[in-house]
Image (cartoon, rainbow, N blue to C red; front, top):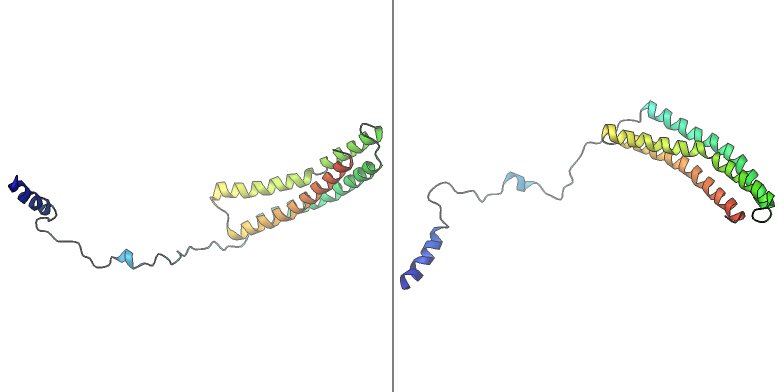
Length: 166
């Protein structure tokens, strides 16, 4: 047993040493010389927005703005009829609800423009695997302009609906 206690540590220590050969250098490696805190510089796709995209987005914004004019007339009529409407289920209330439905239908150009702008962005993401920064800025600008019209119309419709007790 005493012999085993003497040879066991020698056996374990001999496993740590390899016979001959070159040992790896403890000098810094090339990859270790790169500071990991330095941001990686990526080339920016800074091309201008294409004329086709600019033209398409301008047409969609113009569609929304012209649709807003049609909506304003229908919404004004609905608001006027809602203010004069009688009790729920009365004839004047039903006429006001029909005018409200007409105003809701007049929002189609705006909702269509919003959908088309989203489609432009999603198609670019699918086909190009990304959107160039200037294209993205143009899409976001058009979406914001049409979105503001959409929100204003939605708020106006909610006010008329509250007036009618809906």
